[in-house]
Length: 96
Length: 469
Image (cartoon, rainbow over all chains, first blue to last red; front, side):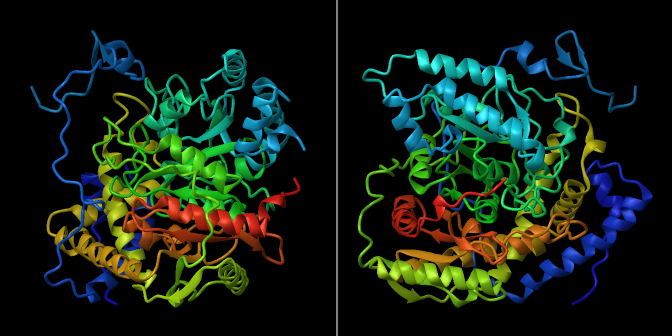
């Protein structure tokens, strides 16, 4: 079993997770443990095997193109802590 | 017998004969919750006023001709099902103040069937785990011995049913989250075929696996709830258009000649007492006329690796939506387990690793699906232990990043293949903890496993034994 190295800071950034230095150290060790466990899959021969993503075999499921009453704007905004003029308010992501 | 101890079938009979009212039945459950829940912590939220109002309403409805299958029946629902106007946390503080503006399809169907909702049950946060120890709202304790875990992630649901706080419960399973807590709490837990029951409005865990289902005191109750829940849903494109058969009609059919598959791989590294009880149950099934056949199945240990990759990857994608902007709190509120899973999934899906992990796991998934298809050419159902052990002591899951995967090793392969499975109690350990066995059917053949489960349950009668709390 070979040891996997994970760049925890990079992954935390991709996942948008704020982690403390202590957490990073702890997770690094635990994630590497889990990775070395799942690496045993490489032993299984999957040459010419198609992947399964939909297990009951459904394909191209469409629905009637009909409008059904959606949630009201009021209901949709009810749980938000940052609303402005009937919209969700988010922090700017582009610099002016 | 107290009213809260009744099964759905018994309660329906009592209501019909006017031996008691839905209000009295609901009050008995609420009283039990008040007395017992401080000890076991099965509920995150109890909605006493709404439950009493709904029970009164049920009593007022004319029953002539209109036979709602769950009219006036108190039910608990796992806290990852959206309930309109009622807080839904998935046992995480990220959703600590989230009040859904709509009902999950499962909740709507149960309401249409006349249920009285008692409250929302505790779970591992985001359904990540098999212990209910990762809940942000306290650990749920096993009603048979409060020093032990109820299992999970539907631990609150299973404990609420085992402790007779409710007539029945609703849980959800990705790989084990219904069957394993049902086994550890000594109740019946049914995981339907993937796509048999809608996932709409359920806080998503791993979308290619998630399957909601009933946790009940008896097999017949389980069949009754499945009948209410099964079917195509406009809001979930992965639900099947296949018509659901009548699950109650053939429960008592003789099982003469039914071929039951047993695989040695499912008894490896299983606790000796669990092994004995399940073997005893298989002998009883043989006496009931079933033919026992040995089947060779893919070793369940590979399923752990497949499941871990699929689940962590899908978790990282599903939990990306929790940004604290539209509802809930921000991402700093995630607990350790959710953070670990999001991180591993993000890693597995990140540039350069997709083929090595997710795609590889989906290919091995194909092999597992084929393996079961092959086995089901020789046998009708497969019987195995549900969990390698009975309930483990409180604290067991701490600092073990693979705890859930290991305790769920025997249910992961069938979950990965989208198969239905049912846990039924099959005895007790010397310590007095319940042992569970599972019956697995081919896809969309729930009626088969229900039939076998019912015949065994009626002969063995383990449901008569109740925990002393």
